Image (cartoon, rainbow, N blue to C red; front, side):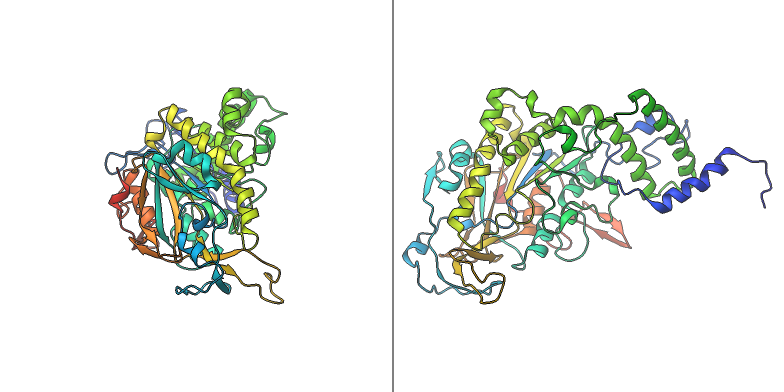
Length: 486
């Protein structure tokens, strides 16, 4: 029985508790100080003290070379021996059984020569396949190519999780989530972490950009870039029934109710994420429409990037980075398009044509704007492909494949540009045939540790305490590869 007169806060407490239990699932968006700026907590506690402003800009552990990241994801696993890792021995051994035999997901047989020509580019003489000739012509001396990458298993799902989250099986925060957790965001009107994948989700879906046990505010915000109109790119970006002024009044009331509720639940992560989502959704009506509208770019710039979905996505990515978004991921289509188990010549050529010009334009554009020096660009898939041809299995899903390559986690290529890496540099190598990392192997954990170092973090100290343990992106692994850093 109540022993005091009725109070307004008692009435809405029950309602808010009900809403809290129901959940509204919008933890992918961010708050940037609106509650504190509006003075909703009086003088007793600031928004940051209430843990309501997690995306405030923060300083890293030490001076950083990079302050933002764009990850161009070759979804499905591009063939390194057909792109950035030339292997003349494959031509010599073409059609023959090679000495190097490693376990792969599917059966493979004899060596298969690359159908693509390699050429040296730039003052560095970097060798790149004709598939990425435009990228090489534009920025060979800016690329830091790691030809000795390795992962753990030859399967998409665990390898995607490893590359994106540093863990192949258990739910862990993604790289973008760790970066925004560590650095915050420079734009209060846009999410700090955006992931773009045209046509739908990739394999493992939103787990690739999850925040896991980090607060929901650090999760990636998904955008389907198959659409060109802003209203379709971001659903409900414009409220067609309520004016901005009326929306602001409604949100102000909701914030006052939430502020009272948070006095008793100061660390309720779900409620905080919900509050942050409402605020950012309101503010995005102004900035997001502008950021995603590439018609505001000059004709010359749009023509430089090209008109494919992938190229438009890269132009949008540059516009987002320019506006303070901390981490942008550009996926090459839903599913796993680079997964060329058959007809690798035809399929890899088609895919490269969709994005090569856009990557070249992005690197040129960033350089011209003075952004490349503090923007870390990563190109990678979850693994590479075998130097041997895949053998069809009667009655199996690959029963009709021919002239394709299977998955290869033993050795593959990734490259970085900008952000303090050594340009025009090749690090490590695979064996004579491109099957396994041989010289200076770089595990995915090592890549993550090195990228965090470029962003100003000691990967062993960027941690989050959960379930009685301090977790980090690299778990208990990873070494910084100093030879990749300029």
